[in-house]
Length: 318
Image (cartoon, rainbow, N blue to C red):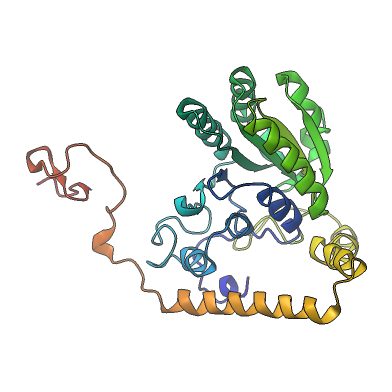
């Protein structure tokens, strides 16, 4: 957030602060070779899946050292090395991609699964219903995880969902629907692990709804007109009583982990973030002449008569 406010991150920035338990709990249930799709808010998700902080921070800043060489930016992070096939600025955009990825695993005869993150707003998109129906029919190895933070930008679930209990929608597609406390990392892990086992053993998809809360605004960088859509008291109560990091910190202390060890872990995390920031600052910006790079993939590479260069389509047509 400090980097965005310091004009180091271009465009918009969507914070996932407050939703860490849903991310970590679900990703812990995956193998390294499993796949994942995220959302426009998925800055914590790549960390949970194992993306390197240095490259992730560089991508957020649009730098050449980023996971997508600065071409994806904040809302379109991908990292095939750890199974992140996409994140998307389109609401519900990752749901059909995750479904297709799961279909690929089934066709290839492997036991890889795909974890698909999306928000409560995406549940009203056609892609949600079409994808869940297909996944159920074909028993695809995919886990649909809804991070229900209560608001689609400024519209509450109560105002936009005829059936506000999102997990019940799974019944319409013949798959299990499970609701968990999205601020409890252990609860999310247990639900995700059960869903992963079902998917990996050929039993098909599961819809997991993690009830969570975003502590910040929908995004930083734009002004939301009109009256406030949630009370200051509501936000402060969530931060005070439902911070997933503080909640799990209490669990660890109760289990006998001493305060000194926790402080050491927190310091280590802070240092890793600082190193990532320094790496991103030092990474160069992409050169303007490389703009067409990675935009096209053609089987006719090198056939100049068709206007194709070694990196794809020649923008000059020669």
